[in-house]
Image (tube, rainbow, N blue to C red; front, side):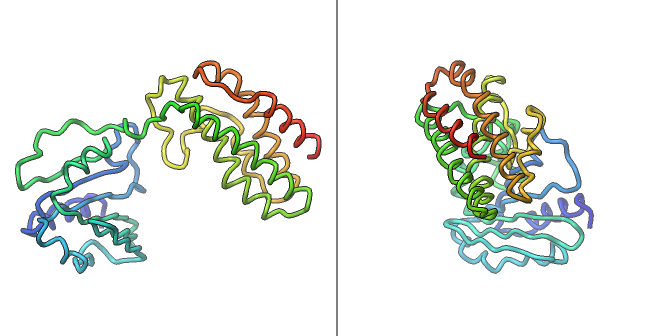
Length: 266
């Protein structure tokens, strides 16, 4: 079925089921900064009366399409099914008791109510990505990120020198590159007065920084060494102005020593 057909089915299912009192919608389909495309998920929550909520673990989901694969995530105070259908549609469907609606709307500015049989939530403000904006770091967060970046860079170096590609790549990908992206994200926040989101998995970073693709050439030890060298250069180029503009401090001597130590051995 088309995505429009699935959307209408989501609505009619709730309209016809007396236990479902509201439909909540969240995620990218409510984000005004996102260009819609055929790959967007439907992130939907059915809010049901508190007394019937415990029975919705057996809610019939086959109506939404021919299932390819699903992941079932029962969590506290909700049921959650992540469903990929053979027609290409994907639906993340959650069931929550209606008593949690105030918290649901407060926790994320992308959350909204599509259908309200109770009439309590008919004049909601427009959705925005405000709760996903880059947050100004505290001194502690700044310290922790810089320390983690440079400390774990020595692990990557050790793996390279030992000839242990998987060891080196694991620490580079999971920590060093992620902490670099954290610093780059704060730079974007600084430049935009902390008024935007860089998207899930940092997907908007390439629009602001060139050369990030070089951080993914990790097929051999030479590539990993070059990626580490590039990451160190980017961090060192960034830190002086970033710390100055955010009015934060960092241990320049330690950064310089560690950088020099690593680069001399690569």
